Image (cartoon, rainbow, N blue to C red; front, top):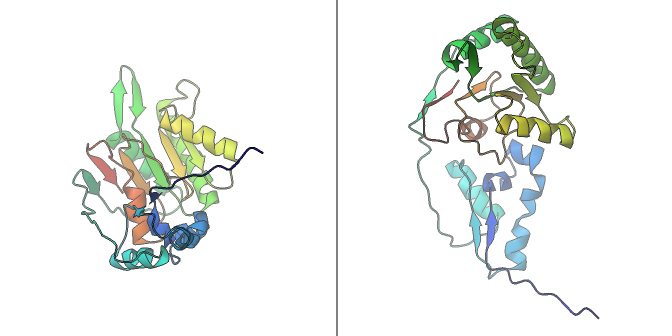
Length: 231
């Protein structure tokens, strides 16, 4: 007999704990198992639980406590305010003009000259659907190629969504994280667990689903503490 193995659990940490709120669309789409996390408190009642999230309204805070089965817990809060983030609302033109104006803005506001070439800063563009995500990525890439040329043969813009294979998603994410591809056009499938410091802009090409979601998504900009823009 190999005998028995025992594991001593000293603390349980739960990130993105707002997903345990059963009404959260992010939970329903990407973290459905979070609604079952009360299992840990009922099975291990003496083990402390640390629940963390960057986004939680008063209602969500109440729901998280209830869903996780916590009683008499300590609650620590800090401000949502990120002084280095600049929020803008712009009128969106119809049709192809929307991508063209976005491309003009990227070149004028989020690029810098390196010798005879122009380098785009790092950013995320969120779209509501996979088709819109692919269309915007393709049209924006074409616009930038027309203005800047083909560059070194690699794309400046790539799309990311849940219908890509896991290998494709990993490749796109790595290329963006490493700086090989500066701009990623993504659905909500992109971003959970992302912590890239030098994201200079987050653009919502489509209206976000919720205020909580918008705070999560726009909050991926400027984590290095420098000025960044949420548009």
